[in-house]
Each structure stands twice: as structure tokens, then as C-alpha cells.
Length: 405
Ligand code: CAP
Ligand code: MG
Image (tube, rainbow, N blue to C red; front, side, top):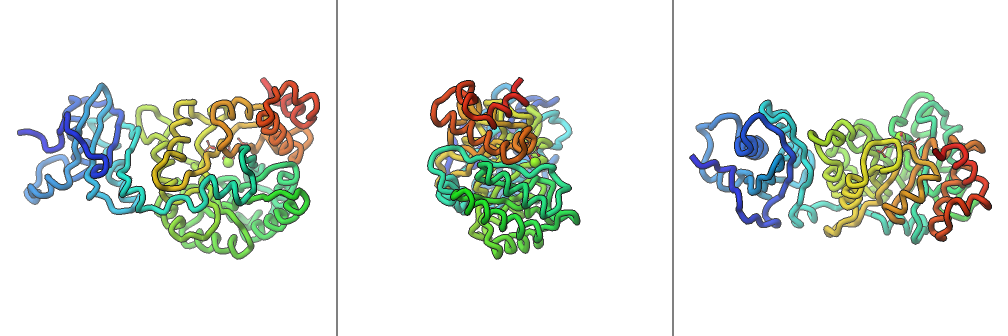
């Protein structure tokens, strides 16, 4: 009997179907594997059921419309989806990763109907809004992560942040595992660091931003976001995957009027395996739909995995025209000033470049580390080779002296 899930060669209307591209490896034949994936991710299960109706099959069955070597393309009727990322993922990224006879499965790409995308609010600030807030027209933004990741007191945190801002950082964030521990209580840290921010803006004449990490059980996240706002904060940070898309979508809908910085810690458990899991560009699109203004997308040249092709796909997910504002791609992880020229060569100027160790590990300290980052950006923006620039910029010279390999 012809399978309701196999529609090879069919023309698919991209406005009526959500289209997924999967990599797969299976002990089954390609058709059998495709059929089991399409069934389990839409209306089916391992066997036929007496309760099935023709009308359901016609309306809601996913359709495999293209099969190549280890690649299947599946069209999902838009009607299957509510405007809810948790529900979407339960469809196209749920049980199917655990089907016994499918040895590997990776969700490579998702093309969303514009009607689905436009049901989301998306970034409230986006790249343009963040640039306007910080009065930085063209160059990349320079940020740091306070290090050590955890352990400093709120006073020490605020002091290190001040040194980073005065040295030249536009943006300071908490690390992904710093939230509300006894040694650095959230409210005390926010109050003191925002006071430091005000002092740094006065000292430098530049606009600055700080992203306190509000990641926590949801009701606590709301309280912490409100606390940041009540204290004059302009930004919050969320660990998007450990908090989950329910929290992310809800925080976006709350619309606190602050920039939302999305950290993707734990993504490696899902995105890194080239044969199994979900490509980061899919998570990046969903984060943008939910309202993330700034999103970590990899560095190509730094300490974390993610080659050029992958990172470029993640950047595209943040900025492609889809009726929503673009999310600011954030490069962070194992970076120091010496990485900035090759990074800007590949990714251009519309990025946020962050360094934790690459700022606080500078031989002359945090402020000099921040200055070295800004000097490297200046060198690239002025078209001056870094070897030339270090002759007159000591902080940058010392950064290269310590870390250049
Ligand atoms: C960077 C960082 C970032 C990761 C995030 C860290 O510190 O603070 O969380 O790089 O990775 O904790 O490692 P360093 P990604 O600058 O000292 O490496 O952006 O790939 O999600
Ligand atoms: Mg970190």
C-alpha cells in the first residue's frame, strides 16, 4: 500500500509547509527510514491505529518530498504548529532522534513559512537598536566576560567591569554560570555594577552596556529582569538552552524594553555532532524569533568548535531578511586582540567580539586587555596591518607578545 508519508517529487508550497532538511543514517532502507521519521514527527507511531481518520492523514501527515544520499527533505503542514517553540521542537526535533532503527539523525535546516515567522515578535532592538543604544555606528562592538567565571564578590565584579569599560569595552556580561550564588548575590552585583557603568560612561564619554545573567527558574527570571530594569539596566542575559525555549519565548513576549543577550551554553551537546542532533543555525533562528537581540554563534578561530561554514550559517540565521529585526552575532570563546583581524576578515564589522581570558589575562591587567581589543578593531577599521599598529600601541603589542602563536 502506498505510504501517506512518501510524496517524492511533489511540489511543496513554502508558505503552507514548514520544510526540514535532515541528515540520516539507518539500518532501514532510505524510504523506510524517511517514512518512520515523517510518521513519528507528525501523526504516526510504530503501527497503524484504529482511531486514524482519512481526514487527519490528508491534513496533517508530514510528506517526504525529496530523498538524496543520507539526506531527506520533509514538508510539515503549517496547521500542525501553534506559535510555540516548545511545541515546534516536539514535532520536528522530538522523538525522531531516538528511533531505534535510525542510527544517526541531524536536523540541518528549517525553512519557516513567513506567516509562522511573523507570528513572533523577534528582536526588539536588533543590530540597529543595539548600535543606536551604544552610539556605535559601524565598528564591531567589543565585550568582555568577567573572569574568573565565578568567585569574585559583587564589589570585585563591579570593579573589574569598571576597568573593562574604562579600558575600552562597550559591553560587559556575566559568565554563563554566574547567577545568584552566595559569594556574588544577583541584586548586589546588579546594583554595584550598574553604578560602575554610570561612572565609566562619565569617565569615557562613551555609552556602555551590562548583561546580568538572569538564568533561573522562570518566576525568578521575571523578578530578576524587573530588578535590572528598576535599577536602570539596559540589558539582560539568558542561557537560552539551560533555561529553555519556553522561558525564552515568554521573556521575549514580556518585552522588558531591554536588550536580550543570548548565551548558548550546553549547545555543544546538541549541535556539535555532525551526524546527530540539531545544527546551531536552527537554534539561532528560533532564538531570534523569540526575541534574542545578541546571540553567541561561534568564532571559527577561537577555542570552541565550529568551522567557517557552520559559523557563517549561524550568522545567516541571525540576519537573513524574514520580516523580523536581525540579531547581533556574538563571537566569543578563546579570543584575544590578535584574533580580531582574521575574524573581521571573515565575518565583517556587524559582530560583537567578546574576550574573557583575552582581556583579563593581559599582562598589564583588565583595562589594558580591553584597550588591546579596541586597538585591534581600530587597526582593522583604519586598514593598518596589526604588525604596523603595534609599533605605536603598547597594549596591543603586549597582547600579541603573550598570545600570538
Ligand atoms: C568565553 C566564555 C564563553 C564561551 C561561549 C567561556 O570565555 O565566557 O562563555 O566562549 O562559547 O566561558 O568560555 P573566554 P560560545 O573568552 O575566556 O574563552 O560563544 O561558543 O557559545
Ligand atoms: Mg562563559
